Length: 254
Length: 249
Image 1 (cartoon, rainbow over the protein chains, first blue to last red):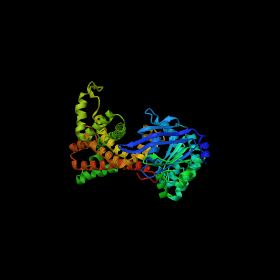
Image 2: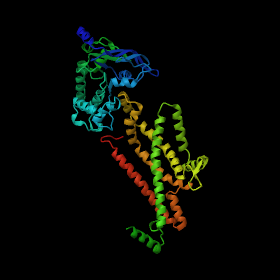
Image 3: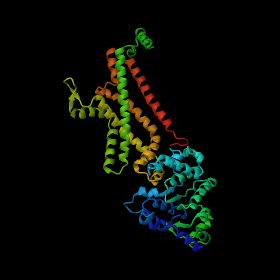
């Protein structure tokens, strides 16, 4: 099992490398000595209690939040470099938020089309064709002209995923994307993400969906006190966690 | 029909002594309509300019330059904390007096900026200062999550403003903006003080010659009610056109 995993992971080059990252808000240290490597095509889940810095870590990866110490490299780009072209970095990194964050004054289709037209300066006709395809992919072909306020939470979240995908990112970050959804709509979003992962998109998920993490993730990391304490293969993670803190957390939630 | 109206008001004057000369006397009517047009013109130009000033100010105030921020803050403070009539007099008498004059084409001297011009400048800056604050409040009310979403899609600050922040902020601050623009329309009567032939000035000219103060006061009030009603109607149309299905800002 372990050998097979290692063999599979040799396939892709590292897309996201987090080394010795520390993040403090004032005196409050959220992330401490965090190390994480995500290779192309991998799906990595990060689980852990609230306030353990999971969302902060994702925001550090696309430079929404600056790190205090250590280094982060995304697709060969040094995120903590002061001269970093943040816009170029963010074109490579898609992020989906817990509260969807769709632009309320634009229809579903416009939400998906905006960034490629404004940021990548691509031709409208081309973008529209791709966006229509992306909405079909997330199962919302019939909702092109609906505004976010007219969509359910699960539908909005799928539009948000399509919006990120429209930028052709090298890696997708998911920040507790199902936390605000009921079990039924949760499932439609998780299926969408699973399909993405299966197609080979590099994904980093912060999630409380243990079953989903176990099924889809190549690696599951556990964070607490900012530290990622356990990066074994998922089956081992859930079956026989090494660290006492992980065991305690899993006993609570599984 | 105009003849009938004129005849009615002429008779009203003869029988009841209510002298609405603007409705039957061609000269008074023309003076009044010129005043109405001048007021409308000052309103339209000042509204547009004050909106532009508000946008520019809030862009600079939210930018990286400390000097820019300081400049906008001083501007807002200055124009918000002084009476508009004093501002108008300051521009017309103090600043206007310093500017060189040009030939009026008949051998005389003409000021570089007319009274109407100064009125427009003063009112635009006055209302613009309030608009800066109104827009700032609107922009601050746009959820941070929208900014985060746009930034993570690679939007520049300008794109972010144009496509997301301003369209949402506008919808949020329309009621406050409405108020300020209505106030601006009413403030234009101050131009009377520097001899701009706007509505109040025209009316006062008429009543001092015709001695129909009471009648003209009523005409004046009704005219302003209608003028503001038109503005409010336009703003409501705009508000309705910008309404987003399923979204309450």
